[in-house]
Amino acid sequence: MDRLVIQGGHPLRGRIRVSGAKNAALPCLAAALLTADPVVLSNLPAVADIRTMVKVLQSLGTEASLEAHPDGFELTARLACAGSEDPKAPYDLVKTMRASILVLGPLLARFGKATVSLPGGCAIGARPVNLHLEALERMGARIEISHGYIHASVKGRLKAIDHTFEKVSVGATENILTAATLAEGTTILRNAALEPEIGDLAQLLVEMGAQIEGIGTGTLTITGVQRLHGCEHAVIADRIEAGTYLCAVAAACGDVVLDRCEPEHLRSLLDLLERSGCVITEREGQEGRQLRIQREPGQKLRSKDVTTLPFPGFPTDLQAQVMAVMTQACGISVINEGIFENRFQHAMELERLGANLRTDGHTAIVAGPADLTGCTVMATDLRASAALVIAGLVAAGETIVDRIYHLDRGYSGLEKKLQGVGARIERVGGGKV
Ligand code: UD1
Image (cartoon, rainbow, N blue to C red; front, side, top):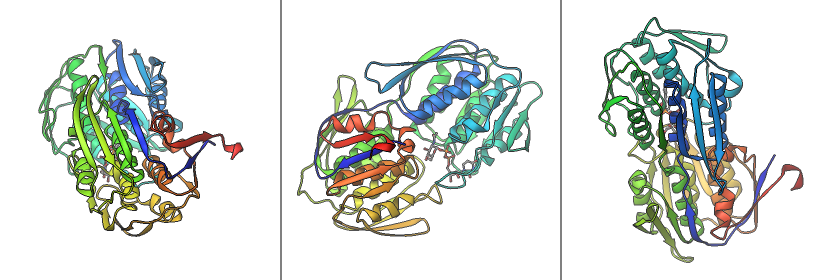
């Protein structure tokens, strides 16, 4: 098993090119199931989750190829889904990536049936799929759960609904939005999630011929069509990857320009880092917007409180990284996790590195600044791993981050991108450390 070995205490200076958004790419890949025509998706990050989703699509009768770009950080997928007699997303794939549930809506809408493994719990909380299933049942699907699988079918086409999600859910919004594109009639989805990745998915669906109004708002109106066609689409930049590098500079100091990002997708983090004392500049670059972050060594950070909420609130996917930042800020920071019930597993590992913090239920209290010192820490989930890398960049001496297969699920070339801005970080095979 690979590990990352980090020599901390070196400021980061230079440029990082932000990859495409994993969480936009996954629903876009699933949406390719809606048509037999070729769909070409570019700017996909070269991460394990993308390869897993492509395997899921292949198991569902899709011809798929993934082409890596010369920099190794980016992939283009060419997909054509003829379909299969009995579309089934197996447990072996779904258990490694919960987002596999996103194939349920497209499969039901196009083929009238689907079998998808129940994803089960995960390290950060229960993560049920009731909101997905309730809406599909209201659209006329018959849903049965047996032997760990969701068996769904519908006679004829799915029917349009006027539906208010009881809770804001990114995945449920995506699943029902895609399903509704081929349903009979006009579906209205209220209390839909506002995450930018949903806007990107909706944009792809429109390019495929879907009729969607209200993109970017909490009410999506989708008029179902008989069929969708192929298209070429480039996914948006990864706001969480960009946010992770911003947190790395805020914590470890330096001066870094992020190429190709969308500041509007990161407003809550940018506000927080600016209020904490970092200097942030936005400008137009050759390949889209750029963000520059500066915090010189010796420049103090101020602690700030954070509550994670659905977009445009502070993203739960940046909570762990910002906790690593707050270990370096002067004063007390109260961090409330408002989305998932068990998302503080990085806290104990940060403590092992010398952070001064306490957790109680959904709240973590961080007192800073703490002198972090390197040791071996264990990654527990994707974003927790990123927080440990950030802390390792700060800590004196050597930090070893173990179990980085979590990190490889969602960060394209993390150690190479960090090396490019002067970090002393190396990937080492499990047997060699
Ligand atoms: C997506 C993101 C994930 C991010 C999360 C919240 C992808 C692939 N993953 O996950 O990185 O952390 O949004 O921004 O895009 N819930 C229910 N019933 C359901 C569905 C969700 O109770 O049927 C709850 C969840 O347990 C959670 C909350 O709703 O407490 C939000 O979850 P949701 O937005 O659905 O997250 P995901 O789509 O799984």
